[in-house]
Image (cartoon, rainbow, N blue to C red; front, top):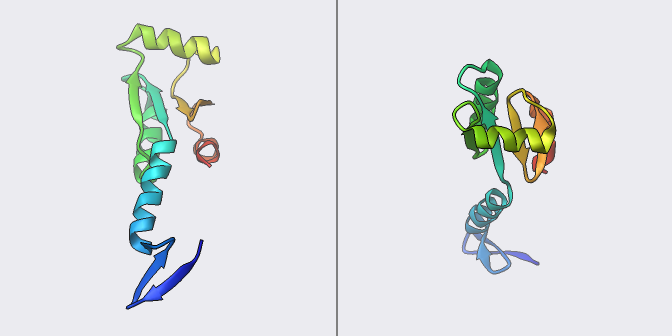
Length: 106
C-alpha cells in the first residue's frame, strides 16, 4: 500500500483518498451489526437509542413488548428479562452501557 500526490489529489492504493475513506466507512458499517431490544416505556432504551444516533451508529430496533417471540429470543440468549439489551456483532450488552457498546464495535 502506498500513498502519493498527483495534482493535489492524494491517492491510496490507486484510489483517491476521499473515495477510499467513504468505501472504508461503508465497509465498517457493513461489518457492524447493532440490534437494540426495547419496550415502549423504558427511559434507558430512549437514552441508548439517542446515544447510538448521536454517535452515527446505525441500529435495528426491536420492541419486545410488541413481539413476544423476540422477547423469548432475548431471554434465551442472555437469561435477562430487562431492557435495553443490545446485540453488537453477536455480543450482548445488558442495560445502558455506552462503553461496552463502543468496545464491542471495535
